[in-house]
Amino acid sequence: MPSYQLRDTATGQLLARGLTDYSAAEAALDRFDEELEADLATNGEGAGRIRLRLDVEKVTDDIIESVGHHVLILGVNDPTGALPPR
Image (cartoon, rainbow, N blue to C red; front, side, top):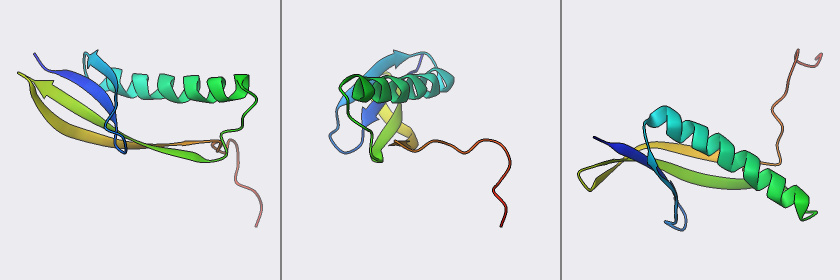
């Protein structure tokens, strides 16, 4: 049965493994984003537009296949509500 894992694209560091499916990998990405922003805030540091490139990999019988690529941009809040007037 396949499992999924997250890897930092730049460093090759494995960030999470043994995730049951792609949805679990996406949830892990969300948690990683929130935890990193919280850690930066705790240390009195702003995220200042940090960009992280992460790969989602599928592991089947010790064969690793990249199945997704995500870019997390910290320090940028998604707009909510209506668009501003022109």
